[in-house]
Image (cartoon, rainbow, N blue to C red; front, side, top):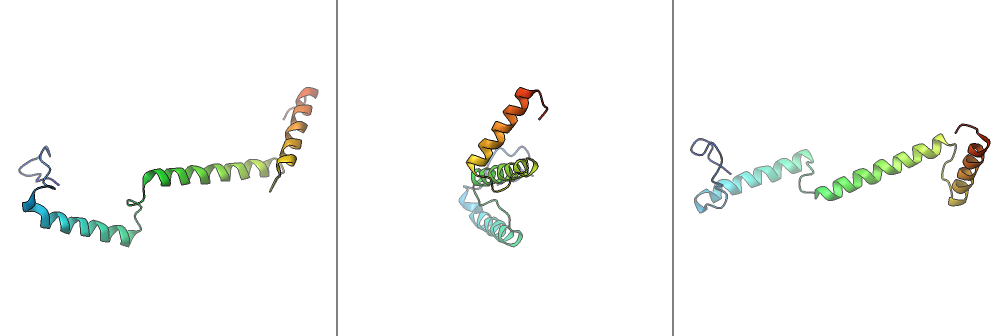
Length: 96
């Protein structure tokens, strides 16, 4: 929290200054209210957001790849069989 008129380079943080405590409380309350009203994710740790994004991304990617290969809800055995078929095709010189 800075006084940008008196301190345009924002060198002195006033958040710990007891004189500005009421302003700090009012600003924090306003931010908390805004976060609730807008559904802002700022209170959620970024690591969990990023991790969830990549989990979702790769799950969707995996599903898309399986669907493109004609596989869905594939078991490990079925997936292994698919790869074995690909190896056989490569050995014969067929394109994948």
